Length: 185
Image (cartoon, rainbow, N blue to C red; front, side, top):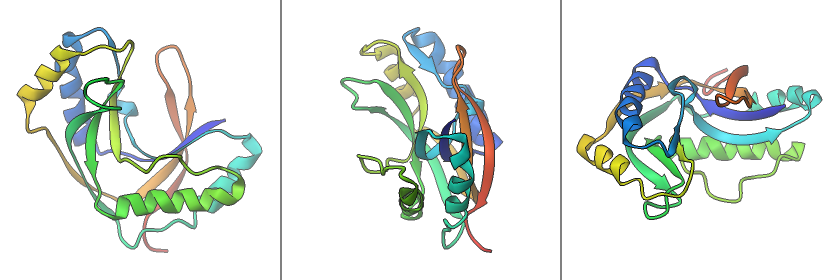
């Protein structure tokens, strides 16, 4: 089973992201845009794990706690690996120190199950689109520049989820497997 751990976005932020994607789509056919209903804030991509290991993952994730719900703001855009050689277009996420701490706790919780830590530091973002071929995508950059400052809003994250990701020709489909509160209990 292909899995990941993520925080969901509220409907109002998803609506604003949908509006932005609608503006950007006509600018190029060289980007595979994310489905707004599938955009989430990934804390950890696990990948393939055996079905029998899911209960162990749930148990380990149940021990992860933040000291309080997380205040998260979505604003700005950028490119991975960089603007000169873009492969991914992303939206910026600010969750203060609590967000990378939560991602680190998730990493630590899963380590005893043989799920390795990420090689690179946690970089909070929402993937907006992936380039089909390397391209300068100047038209997309111009549309983004005209939208500045890009502000999508803020929300309080009170929970995170373990998801299953099913690959399909129309893009990945996500199904919640388990919910975990961030604070309390």
